Structures are given as structure tokens and as C-alpha cells.
Image: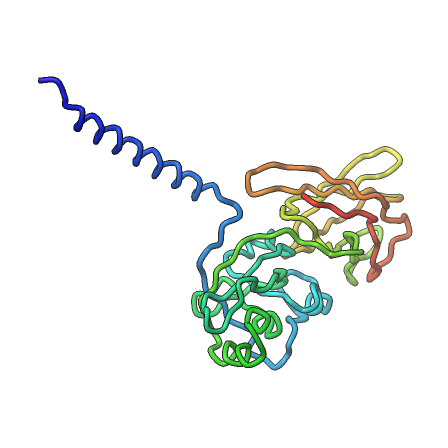
Length: 260
């Protein structure tokens, strides 16, 4: 017996529903702009800003980066690759919280009560609707949040190199990268001699600190590999070179802003 028009319609409807569900599932799996549910705490001290001894190696600069809206991260630290990444974090209670939340920069590693973030007290309070709501959030200590990766932006700031105080030319060079911009990770760094472009791949010592023994000589060109969540890679070369007579503890403006 041939199938009835009704049964054919039901079959087509079921197929269409299955196709829609598969499409939605695929979009959810590949969505890079979606919010992820998590939890967040705040630093338990009285300091409104972040820590000046974070695991990313930013030092005292890390406490004031992004105006003090910073955070420690647990899994998002990613062995130091996550240092300098920016996230929009917003708490989920409509009683206390805004839809905008706060944008924070990862400057440290840590977790508390199964959290992805330990925010500075300032950043924690910025998720609230007003001062009274902020006080209530801080009193709770740990709250449900949702987050997503966003592009870092530092108006009027270029990517900057801060030489570590323990650097000892020409035997040892270490530096940390300030004002990482865009939405991609810095996954590799090279130093190249400007006169012959011989390059040396640096080691990630910890966090955002890059090191090498017997660094190249002369003025140096920096090359940074930016890698996106989709695996796309871009080598970026700053405008300014590191001078031949670079010194430990000094900062050097690369003259470069990126939006990748």
C-alpha cells in the first residue's frame, strides 16, 4: 500500500525538525561569540584593584591594567597563553546585575569554589546596577556569571615591551608584553637581527614572560604570532625596533596597534 499524504507530511516534518536541530547544534558548537555559564569570586583583600604579583608576570602594572578591571583565571589561564586575554563577564541575577557586565583582562591564575574568574573587587562591583547592589554582590562573595571572549582595546596605547629587571645583555633577555590587543592569543615570539633578519624563537618562561639566552645582537625586530580560536595564525611585526643598547627594566613602545 502506498504511503498516505498524511504520513508523507509527517515524515517530511520530522526530517525538517531534525535538520533544524542539527543546524542549531552545529551553530552552538562553533559559536565564538556566545556566553558560557560559570561562576566568579573576587579577591578577598581590601584592594579595589588586582594583585601586583600575578602569575602572568605583569607585576605592579597588572594591578592597574585596564583601569584595574582585571581577573585571575583558572582553566582560561591555559598555561600562560591566556594572559592578556579580555572577557566580558556579567552576573546572572536580574536583582543586582546589568546586562553589560564588565570587561576584564586576565593577569593572574587562580580559582575559588569552582570559579573560572577571581575578579578584582572593583571589577566585581562593576557588574552591579548601583552601589547598593555592588555591596550586596561583594557580600555574597561567589556568584553565577556568564562570559565570552572579547577584543582587547587600549585607546592611544601601543603594544609595549617591558624588559625584565633580571635581563643581562648580551647573555640573557626576558620581557613581558603589555597592552596585548585584539581577540587572538600571542602563541609565539621571535627576535630577529635587523641587519640580516636571522631570527630566534623565544621561550615562554611563564605567563606572558618571554625569554632567551644569548639573544641576537644589534637592533632587534620583534615578531609575534597571533592565533585565533579557529586556528588562524598571523605573524605581526611592530613598527619600532628594540634598540641595540636595550637595558633591563626599560620599556619600549613597538609603535603597533592590532585588531585581530
